[in-house]
Structures are given as structure tokens and as C-alpha cells.
Image 1 (cartoon, rainbow, N blue to C red):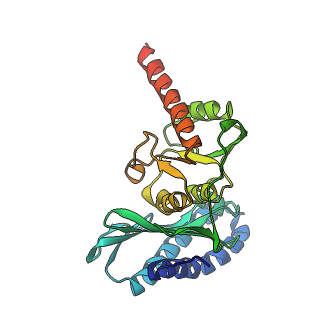
Image 2: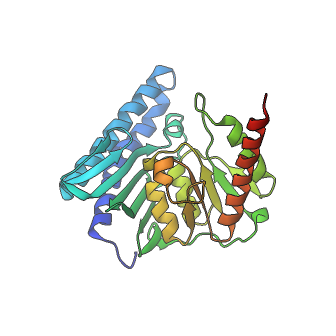
Image 3: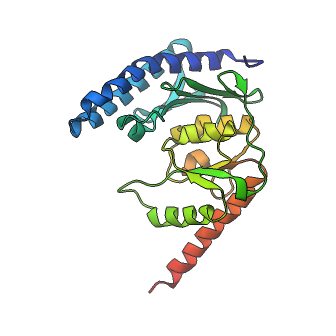
Amino acid sequence: MPAYQSPALNVMVAAARKAARPLSRDFNELENLQISMKGPADFVTSADKRTESILIEELSRTRPGYGFLGEEGGAVEGKDKTHRFIIDPIDGTTNFMHGIPQFAISIALEREGQLVSGVIYNPITDELFTAEKGHGAYYNNKRLRVAARKELGSAVIATGLPFMGKAGHARAGAEMAAVMNVTAGIRRFGAASLDLAYVAAGRFDGFWERGLSAWDIAAGVVLVREAGGVVTDLNGGTEMLANGTVLTANENLHPQLLKLLKGVNASAKVEAANEP
């Protein structure tokens, strides 16, 4: 068990586990819906909404007055202006819809604008990642540390890619090519919260992505920090939740990756400026 687990974190874990039970049943039902093109998408939308509503109900019952920022419900201001839960009911909905067991419920707690607690739970693998500011990060109650590799040549780095209809395909391709050329491999698993949790657990050596929302990354930011990692936006700053970009790794690899990715974008700007 963690040396210390606050009442707030206990509440977050209990809410995630309660919301996960019907979600697991839904996941097992998906194979019956694959015959219809429309069926799975509608089913996932309703699973998303129901999961968020269970989370809000459970969290509000024990923490009345706290605000919320969620994927489905957006921002809801509470009477308590100093606390806010940031929740993603199903991070990795495309995986969920395709029957791929790589998705998670993600809950973060923000206190006076600072991220203080995070829970990321994969209901199918029963992997629970938790962290509290100043008290460490844990995987199923085992203490986590980021990987210790110092060279990109032996590192495995995760990323996310824009899907159909989203901007940034060319830039993502250029960034991926640059990272591929200097690392042991790239992985694209399709759930940013779990990518961050895997960095905290030392499974991935680093992770970067653009076009994210606050609820995709808030809990993961707490996890990586508490596991000894560095988390910034892709400018090297701390505006991850605001600008939707994230880069994380250990203290040795983070500056190397940041320099590499900044170089790609500098080249892209030069090319764009020189186009007729």
C-alpha cells in the first residue's frame, strides 16, 4: 500500500472502480455490435456519457461543491472555487470501440489551480495507477519510478497521431521520422492517459503528443511528476492543459527530445516561409 493515501484519493479510486464495472460489461458486449457500422459508435457515446455521469455522481456525493471539467459535460463550476475534478470517462474511445483493451478512466484533482492527485484505471487489465503531490506514484500499490536510460538510442518513445479530419499530419510525420531515426522504437497505443502512466511506470522512456485536451493528460501529469519524471508542453513550458501539447521523459532524455522536436518545427517553419 502507499505510505499515505488521502481521503480525496480514496474517493477518486472508489469512483473509478464503480464506473468501471458497467464499462467492462459494455466492452464485452461490443462484439455483438460489430455487424452494424452505426451501432458501435452510438454505443460508445452512450457508454462515455453514462461513465462520466457515474463519476460525477460518486465524486459529488463525497465532495459536494467541487467543480468539474469533463469530456462530455465540459466545465461545471462548483460552490467550492478552490477544487475541481478533471475527468475523462473513456480515454481511448477508438480502442474501446474496436474491442482493443487499451483505454482508461482518468480522474485528476486540481486545488487552487495546481494538479494534486491523479487516478488512471484500465478496467479490462485491472491496472490502477495513482499519485498524489508529494507522496509518490503507484501501480496497484507498488511504487513507481521513471526509467533511468540516458541515451535516446536505447529508448522506446510513445506518441499520438492526428486522425482523419484533424490538422497536423505533416508535422506529426516529420516529428515521428526525427524520433525514429535516433531511438530504439516508437509506439502509438491510442490512449494518452495510459501513455503517461506507462512513462511513470518505466515502460516507455518518453511520450509526446499534440492536440490533446486537459482531461486527456491531467492525471498523467501528476503520475509522471511523482515518479520522478519531467513534464512540459512542447515549448518546454508548463501550459500543457491550456495548449494541449505534452512532452515527458526522465531528466536526461527530456531535454534531448525537446531539442529534437523543436528542431523539426523550426525546419518546418523555414520550409513554409520559402514556399511560393
